[in-house]
Length: 206
Image (cartoon, rainbow, N blue to C red):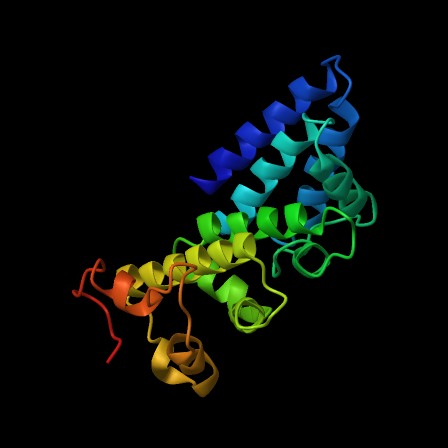
């Protein structure tokens, strides 16, 4: 299945080379960066990274938006995508640009939608993204828009925990993420609200 997907992607690149539109070279550079990051045949892509590539490709086609500049600047500074990390997370989350809120909300939205299974969880955990997001949520610098993004990302995390049956209580650092105090902008407890919605079968949380 992966081999077929890589074949389709290679065929798409061939068609893209023959196309004629303004953003063609940027999309080709994106595909080259992805290809250069693949270190073994038919390497598995996490859903998170696949979503990231799709989002960046969409953003490249929208030069009127602020994030167009940010994603292109990141790509041009990297010859390959490190498939062990969320590309550009720290640059966007801790941005000092005038449009820092737009950049932070963009990456938070991506994090929430990109967390689907244990492979995505491990990708985030490698960079300690959960700890970073939750620490920021509880700081006075966290505005309402970022609070909503943090809350949604926490909710996605707990959904992944329940559906995949992750044994997240196996380490103190991961346990602290679940036990950390976190409430949504309306003052509701995220744990209490989300826990009532989650399936109980297959979850190893005690």
